[in-house]
Each structure stands twice: as structure tokens, then as C-alpha cells.
Length: 146
Image (cartoon, rainbow, N blue to C red; front, side, top):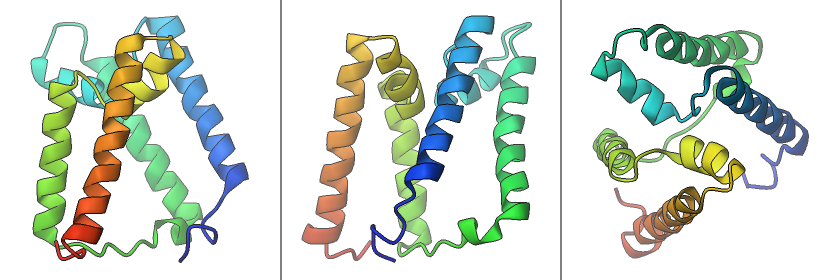
């Protein structure tokens, strides 16, 4: 499927608005940043009184995905053209990067830039440049062989 065949401006706009509402609500009503890596990582720190909202946020993410897949299973038909090893390395690399960058694209890109944070703007630009370079190297230099 070409990029133009998967162009979904209405669904993408609705999704973006919902993400914005969720991020703003979490910040306004609970004083928390909706950065997924920080929310998930906080579960392992086990700070007293800080566990329930994190678990419920992550359960909500999973429940929404499962619920959507029940009604729109075609949205989950994805072919991954990389090996299992490459996916494991990619996942671990992203995990390490979120720790080094003190957050992920949801925390920095959605919430940080929305709060006009210079640090988050620089982090998000770094993420995007790194992603573009990674795609270029894997696809053009290595021939997509990973």
C-alpha cells in the first residue's frame, strides 16, 4: 500500500484531537504528563500512591486498542517486513533512547511542545532526525536486509 492509499486525514485528525484531550486532561486534573514511557516506567519504581493511575492509563490504552480491533479488524492488518531479531533490537533501542532522552515522543512531542518546552522541542527534533537517518541507513545503505 502506498502512502497515499493509507492517507486518512479525518481519522488522523480525530485521533490527534483525542490524544490532545487526554494529554490536557491528565495534566489539568492530575498534574501529570501523558508520556507513555514515563507512565509505564513509573510502574517499576513503585512509589506509594502512584500506581493506580498509571495502571489504569495503560489498561485504557490496551482496552481502546482491543475494542477498536473488535469493530475494525482491518485496521490491524499489517505486514512487517523485518526479522524478529530486528524488531527486538529496535524495541530495545527505543526503550534505551526513552531513558536517555528522559521521555518519548508522546511526552516530549505532544505534551512538551504543547507546553512550549525548549528541551522537549530539541528532544523531538532529535527523535525525528534519528528516525529518518535510521530508515535511510536500513533501507538504502543496508538494502532493507535487517
